Image 1 (tube, rainbow over the protein chains, first blue to last red):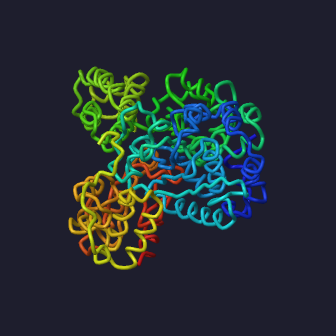
Image 2: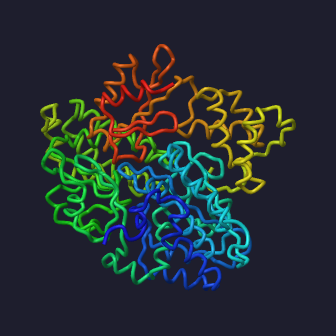
Image 3: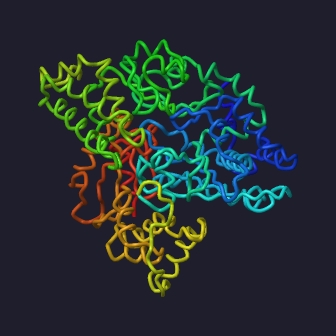
Length: 422
Length: 176
């Protein structure tokens, strides 16, 4: 049941080529929609039915997002793809761009037709040069074959698609920061409302979806929303790409049905490296609160199961830690990341991320004070929910997760000025 | 700037744009400009900065940023804001090869500390600095989205994954 959607072509030689994509029926869904003039509402309904939820991390239902656009509003609308993959632990969209770029292109053209947009941008993080070149080559092939440009399939529908390269900023993965960035500005998130569906890129109605979400669209429309939904479990339709890394034998990206037991995913990734013991798992990118290994081994990989365990599925980035890891050091590194990447716009995040890092750093370096843990607890509640975007929450959540599950290790560090492990 | 969706520039479009950059650089920047609505030339600012940075051997100067501003009809301050916000822009000279080492969680637990240590010793420099001969700059970066190949670094446009000291030796020996 694996490799049904975004990775359905992974058995092919050089799967990124147009001829390979066509040999598996690529662009036929688009051709059918445009020649039959499928009503856009029925496309959106099919996507809603599929249960597809935003694969970038927020998990917002994709079909619902599309339905917020008023299709008949005059003027340009935009489809924007978020390939600014940067949540630590996540490396799946890179593979979609490298190995299945045409499915993403087809998904974006279909999205454009569904919301009445004739222009799209794919925002690719600046460091992703190889994926960018792959995607550019695919765009050229698609243009030459008449799948992008004017009057597609003689339907009168035009769609042009461009890539936009980032230049290094985690915050641009936040959708409105990404739009600001395309507009040639610092990537600082906008106040919401208005949401992008009403006031997006260049002030026009815009849908912005993750790479994996958009690349799932052609398969959903080929095989049906119900088929996709049945791949997964309640509230978590479909398969999902999981990026699994850490102290494991065979890290990589695996497409598996949502609801698959974590233990099976771990087994696919070859199990623990050197037969070490699992200590904890960060189940959805570094912003997702950590879960102890024992508990994780009993969980399934879907939105509800991970949420019930007090964390989140996020981008599907699974970082597996063995018992040689000091949790203070792991948290110190994560806190440094949010401190480094805070865009500086909101005071609680700009100042708070620095405070979090400095306090965890002093514990790690043997200068921790007994009252520091209460201080950290307090600070997280003064950052989370008090900022324009979710980066503040993302900085607070890993701290809260660590102190919930590994408080004793932090206490030991403060009392003995060294790690409990190693 | 919140969500004020107008091009930020109120500057008068500069004349003689062809004198600002070489024909090759202008052709490249113009390709980016053509992707965006005509009144949004500034959308090409990141691409333009990256191109001129590359032309200049890896870093930006105030003069270059001012030229980009003139070329895109932007206020210079708007270009400085962008150039100082994104981590891939450099404001001081860098070595011929900029080695960007990821030290985020997945790389860290797979030994990025040892990779950094090895590079510092081998190149006789520190993170954030350049080797004496100006050949290498060592830079610590945040997650580059290649955690499956941890530990990893980027040199130029290329990712190098599953690093070991031996592999690093052969990678550096193979560079121009």
